[in-house]
Image 1: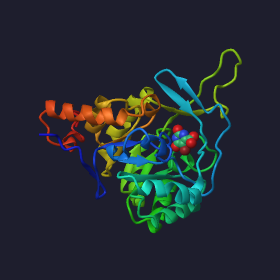
Image 2: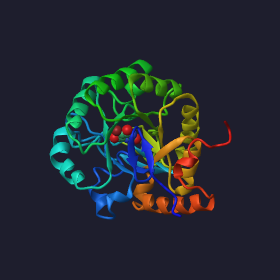
Image 3: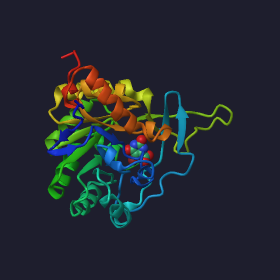
Image 4: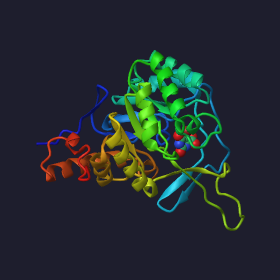
Amino acid sequence: MTPDLRVKIAGVEFANPIMTASGCAGYGEELAELYPLSKLGALVTKSITRNPRQGHPPPRTVETPGGMLNAIGLANVGIDNFLKEKIPFLEKQKTKVIVNVAGSTIEEYVEVCSRLADCERVDMVELNISCPNVDEGGIEFGSNTMMTEKSVREVRQVFKRPIIAKLAPNVTSIVEIAKAAEQGGADALSMINSVIGTSVDINTWSPHLSNVTGGLTGPAIKPIALAMVNDVYDNCKLPIIGIGGITDYKDVVEFMLCGAVAVQVGTALFVDPTTPLKIVDGLKIYLKSKKLNSVADLVGKVKNR
Ligand code: RRO
């Protein structure tokens, strides 16, 4: 018997627990040239803001041991162009669509989400209250419990389908932020966004990134993400979507054992865009070898609780 890979989050059923991470597959068009997006549990878009943004000047990515740093600076097409130019393509894709939303004020999150509320193709929104690379908004909201609760609560008024709050690791207590998102009415959490870091060119003595600091992603951050997922699972009731350095099915199993019901694959897509397909195949073999009928049987089963 083939194991059941379907998972449910806030009443929405996903074909499998593997999603793309925001910012790592744009709006899905390039990935769809390689394989049908129906192979994914969900496509998560690049963050959308009210107005189009150019982002930071290059260089805005650099490799580091076990990962990469990025300081893209929220480059995106803006909500008008997203609805006009990207949604028609997404309408044709047989996968769940999660739109990541960012803003520099709560009003901006509310405005963008109210526009998305009218668009049935958008299955869920993921509130990016954790971008490390912009001066206003982003992590400014996601590192403060009151702002986290308020931003989720206000979006809740205008967006009736499920809301995911995407959490930052660059905080004193991620559990407190998770609880604040729950209090505000979030349906799920995704974690973690990138870890603030930098690197320097020893010949020029300049930072590699034009923005000086960036967000560290990739396998280097996996142990940090796992510990945080484990902690939040123990202290908060919301379903968790695990993110951080996932490159193969073994990483997914670890995240699910620690409490994630689904995961997002980010940096690994830049190395091999077919990573999600390989993970799905690997998961099926693993589950069979463990005589498990459903991937959901893994969730939270790590032997520390
Ligand atoms: O665009 C970015 O620089 C960026 C964002 Br919005 C984010 O949430 N996380 C990240 O590592 N980079």
